[in-house]
Length: 110
Image 1 (cartoon, helix red, strand yellow):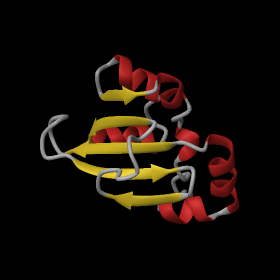
Image 2 (image 1 turned 30 degrees about the vertical axis):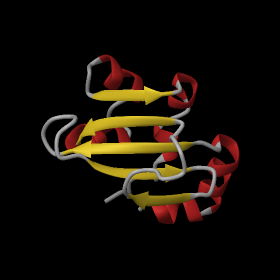
Image 3 (image 1 turned 135 degrees about the vertical axis):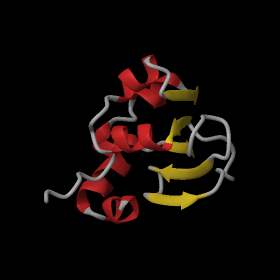
């Protein structure tokens, strides 16, 4: 969904506006264990699976799977997730503050 979103006009605007690279680590049960990493490159407008290989990402976020879904769908504010310990951040705090639910595609209405 993210790849399609970044290829759209709205996604291209995000790429121009933000221009940062985020690494998102998603763990099934506990942050730091069995994590799967994804790179959301808002410089190139790409999403890839795996660790970032172009140096260091601007910010790295770690979530449990269900907390990531809540943030991505707009059901949990990223700042509240951080304060509750549901999200861990490494890297630039100013880059992390640009990580908002606007980055994610809007869920389809059923």
